[in-house]
Length: 185
Image (cartoon, rainbow, N blue to C red; front, top):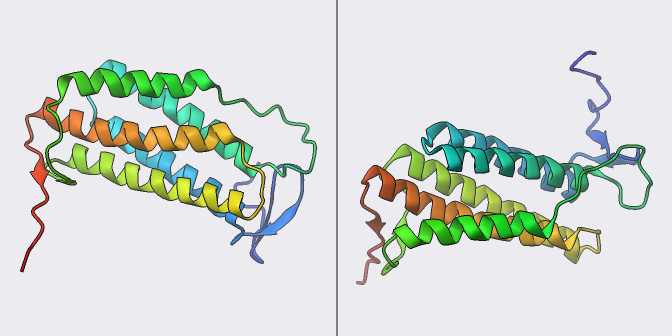
C-alpha cells in the first residue's frame, strides 16, 4: 500500500462513509487536532517515569483514536467499519486519576505559568491543544453537526487531567510552580 494516494492534491478528502469534503472543513480540523493532541500525549508519556501514569497515557491515546474515528465518520452514512465506542467509565477513569494526583498536591493559591521543566511545559502544551480540540467540537455542535456528547465530556475532562498532571509532574520532579504575578501599574 502506498502512503500517497494523490486524492487530496486538490484540497478535498473523504470522511469515513465516502463523503468528500474540503480539508478546511471543521470536522477535518477537529479530528486533525485530536491527532495533534494524541502526538503531544505521546511526547508527555516520553517524559513521564511513573508506570501507572504511562499506562493511563497509553489508554488516553487509544481513546483519542476512538474519538478521531468517530469525528472522521459522516454521521449521515452507514459505514462498513466498526468504530469503537467511548464509555462513561473512560471519563470516570480520568476523574479518579485527577483526584489521586490532587491528594498529593498543595492547594492552588495562584494562577501558574507553564514552565519550570520540559515535562511540565509539555503537559501544558497538550492541555492547550486539548482545549482547542474542545472548541472545535463545540463549533461543530453549533453548526448542527452531530457530535457524540460523551466526546465533549471526555475532552473537557482530559484537559482538566492534563492540567493536574502538569502540576503533579512538577511536584514529583521537585519543580516549584511559577506563580503568575500580574503587573499592576
